[in-house]
Image (cartoon, rainbow, N blue to C red; front, side):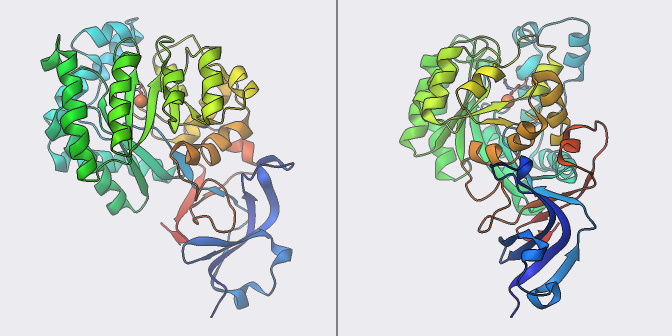
Length: 406
Ligand code: NIG
Ligand code: FE
C-alpha cells in the first residue's frame, strides 16, 4: 500500500506557516495527501523514496505555486435580484445612508429575495460560487439576512447548505436575521427582535441550518443593547457568534463582539483604540472588507496600524453582496487590501488563509501542514506577492478539495 494517495512534486509551496521564511515558502517542494489530509509537506529531497514508490498518483506541478485553498469568511452570496440602480445613484453622489432610508439599500434586496424561489436562488448563487472557486476559494461562509421572515431566512440557509453539498467545497452558514429591521416591523423593533430570538433562531438551530449567528451592530441597523439580545439568544443555543461592527460609526460594536468571544468582528472602519484592545484580549479575528470600502467610496480606513500593534489577527473577505460589494474573487480583495488599506502582500495572503480559517473557527485548514485538510490552490505565478498584483485575470490553475482535484 502506498504512503500517499496523491503526491505533488516539482511544486513551489507557500505553506503560510508563520516563521522566519516569508510565506513559509519551500522552493522545490513536495506535498503528499492521504485520506483527504496532508501527510507530507517539505523539500522534495526529503522524500524517503522515489515518488512513484510512495504514491498511487504522482502529479507534476510544473513549478506552479501551491497555497492553502483560500477561505472567504464573510459573504452574502445568496440573494435575489441585483442593486444596479443603487450603484448608479451612488456613482452620481448618493450616500449609503440615503439609500438605507429610502426604498433602496438592503430593504430592496429583501423584497427581491423574498420574491425569488429556492431553485432560482440556488442557480444564481451557484454561478457566483463557481467563479469564486475558479479563483482559488475552497471554503466560503454564506449569510442569510435578506429574508428577515421565517420562511425566506430558512430558504436562504437551505440554499447555502445545498451549495456546499453540490459544489463540493466547504460552506459555513451564518444566520443574519438581525441584518436590519424589515419594513413591516417599522416602529416595532422590539417585536422584530422577539421574532429573531424567540422563533427564527431556535428554528434555525433545530434544523441545523446555521454554524454561527451574526448581527449588524451599527447606526442603520441594531444598537449594542439590541445586538446583545441576539448574541445572548445565540449563546443559549450554543452557536458561535460574529458581528458586523463599526462600519458606519464607532458604536462600541467591536468591544461587544469581544465581550461575547465572537469568532470575528467584521468591517471595523470606525473602530477606536478601546475596541481594538478588546478584540486583542478576546482573540477575536478582525475581518476587513476592502470591497465594501471601495464600492461605498469610503474615506475612513480600518485602523490597520493599531490592529497590528495589538496583535489582532487580520482576515480578509469579499463581503460578496449585491449592494456594497459585488465582488466574487479573493485575488481582487488581496489587491484592494494592499492598495487601499496598506496591508503587505504577505499579510494579505495570510488574511485569506490562516487568519480566515480562524475567523470561521476552523483549525484544520489555512496552512500547508501535516494533519491539515488537503485543500489547495495552484497558481501560475512566479512568486507569492504576485497573488496580490493582478486585477481582472485569474492566475488560479485549479483547486484541490480534501486531496482530490476539483
Ligand atoms: O456587509 N453591512 C451590512 N451588510 C452588508 C451590506 C448589505 C447590503 O447593502 O446589501 C455588508 O456590507
Ligand atoms: Fe456583510
